[in-house]
Length: 484
Ligand SMILES: Cc1cc2nc3c(=O)[nH]c(=O)nc-3n(C[C@H](O)[C@H](O)[C@H](O)COP(=O)(O)OP(=O)(O)OC[C@H]3O[C@@H](n4cnc5c(N)ncnc54)[C@H](O)[C@@H]3O)c2cc1C
Figure (cartoon, rainbow, N blue to C red):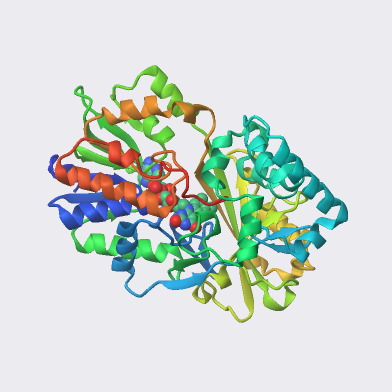
């Protein structure tokens, strides 16, 4: 079937995540094309997929549906109908055995958790930071300038190092400017005095309400894939794109798949990571500098461990969607409580608490290469260390599921700062569009990943070759949330 396609009509989309499926759906809905989506995994949704297990469904990270983009919101509601449930966000920080509000509020609990010495250090550090501003050369400087050294070392230092695998003193301050720009001690005090829970009009750091499909984010992406197929599009699973073939005019002609077949097509919409995209291009005019930039792009990887615990064994009141773990004794970064995202995420919600333990890792490191059995042991032991359960026996070991997620976080380090050169050369390849999170090496949430897909589809439908609108998505710095 693959080799009979008409070269002009077929649009090949690489990856069935939010960006790829959105682009494919918009193209199939509005144009007269054959759209083929090639997905390496056994299901659609990408990072936003739902993985079913005997004890419950796993959401790799806890995906809130929240957007300020009207077009994305309309898309979600058009596809989901009344499927979505509205949720009140509840997330806290586990700090020295105390569950504190996130963002941290100046409450009795916070002072108790910090202790007298810690409170004095925090207050003194904050006062010093208002008088003396450090030159902002690193993320550490950024945090200390806004929160003071005491609060920084209590609430940001070790967590940031866990997320990125690099100490904040080695990270760029730009990341802070993007992710936590709107958070500061004065903001915390103002919010506390006004007692105002921020809603959709607040900065993203403090978003309180979001929507969620009962079976997790993948439910929506499965619905999009179904609609696409009803429109005549195809989604091919368990198949990787290994090469994108470019002719001597620097235009795409076909893609080669891991099953040995080739699909002819003059338009390719890519969502695989830029680093892999550059490696996959055959015959493209890419300079050695551009290739070097692509090869040096960095990613932070991620491991999700699904772990069922008997409800009566849990020693803390778990009302949260997720909990940030601020505890240097453990590798655990965040804890998802799937019961509180949706009861339908859990097979037996009355008796089981279905947890998702999030570990930040790098390919090849100790956590990434740890066997499933050792990972299960580590995860169980860390729940005991943080005081959530008492015994190994509280965990239903036959239900532990571990998923390694490569390239989850495009890092804003090193070669990232030379991305424009690579972008320029990729844009010169006729018929190639690169969109989404890893496909643009940008910290996009689902909505922005989707928007890049919508804008690429618009351009293709209009016969435009201008990639500027697609690259311009999510370039303002007031629209992010820490740690996601
Ligand atoms: C921990 C975590 C929490 C998050 N929380 C939220 C949240 O609360 N709200 C929110 O809106 N967003 C959230 N996000 C972001 C969201 O997951 C992404 O924005 C979104 O999934 C990106 O969509 P995408 O299509 O660009 O890429 P992806 O989701 O990465 O999809 C790309 C797809 O391409 C496939 N692929 C790659 N290479 C190939 C190849 N060579 N051949 C074929 N297929 C290939 C992959 O298998 C994958 O399925 C979170 C992300 C993480 C990591």
